[in-house]
Length: 236
Image (cartoon, rainbow, N blue to C red; front, side):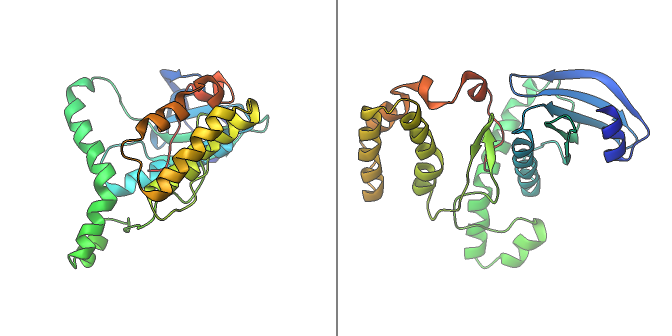
């Protein structure tokens, strides 16, 4: 793998920094290179390329908002033996507890970013918006590429409102897996009721249906524990 990294990154220096880590999905390690420190995530599964491509696009989108610090994505590289690696900027993550409040504010700014762009456009300040950021206001809900939750793909087709997006692109795939794995009749009936309420715009007061539908059989929602134990980048 080191030879591939040297070639793909165009670096003569590739020396481990001693920082490594990971979870139940991918392993990570930091390296010294000609361009500075990089962090490399490694995954040997066939789904790695799709997972890392979605994460790279998600980090790029977050960076463009200029709201919260995230590592700059550099490159996704296929491994000859299978799987892929994702190279990104190395960030020093020690001693962050004292910045918890700042992080919370920045995360709020991230989630409000598109809404604020829309408000500025309505005020006739589109020229100012374009000068400050590369991101343009988006009226729909979704993302331009597939992202993953662990290894599970999340299709982010554009929808006109968040209720439709969440129902079609998030809950429906989970219900499809329940149907495929167990044919659970009660879950199917509850989901049908919830969709009717969503279409009618009358979800308020019926949260118990949503909770029961989602947590009726939580172990059946994911394909396996390995696939569900880590959350990858999702649509911003």
